[in-house]
View 1 (cartoon, rainbow, N blue to C red):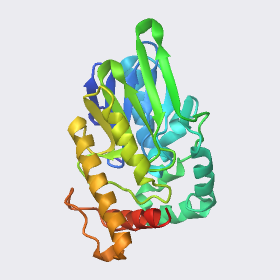
View 2: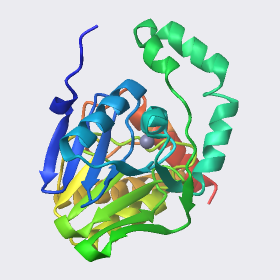
View 3: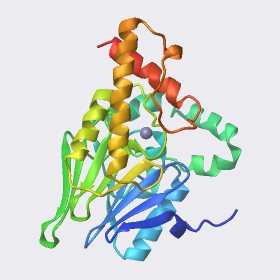
View 4: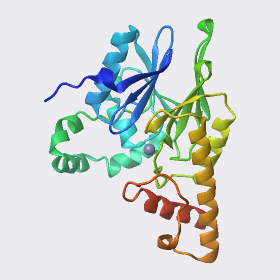
Length: 281
Ligand SMILES: [Zn+2]
């Protein structure tokens, strides 16, 4: 097996923030004077181990907090190497994880997964579902007042019921989690996805003073990408509501021009969810 050079995945964004980019999802980092905050652990424990090791080696401080932005596997499964730190999540994540453990994340389901992806079997074996050790309702703040550091974490919902984002005002950085699929069509078909809450999250982010957005997936982007996604979401919401009024079926709905090519199912399953969401309203 080729030994991975994790330093190649780690990119400095501002003097005290970084982005760690894997093929499966991104993670974020804030270097406080005396400790490190990690945002999402990535999907597979070996990547997460490499991520943590390189941070602690390069910055000579311990990781003290891990924010898990939401309950999707590509943001939760890597947490095992962080299980000795404070794991922070929105309170609704506990129930969402319990629900998954009963089905898609059961032992049998993981055995099936290993059979489907034998090359990944070792990494899959290392997955431990780590529940948050600290939950919050609307916001959670990590501060070092003496040195003027403050990280604000806000619950938003939207992509999923438990979706949160973080804001490091000192260096104008937003850690968006999967509220932002940068430069691609977003996954908006989770059963707990709330398009209205997602739109509100973009609107709230746009009231903040920021320049950089570290997304859950895709490259580092800026304010204009949030504006672009917000416009697309609003257009799509209008179209979905009109389609419901007129009784147009999912397969006949024309999606406004956005990023293409779209990963199979991302758009159609998102549309089906939005139709259901607004039909039930
Ligand atoms: Zn997600």
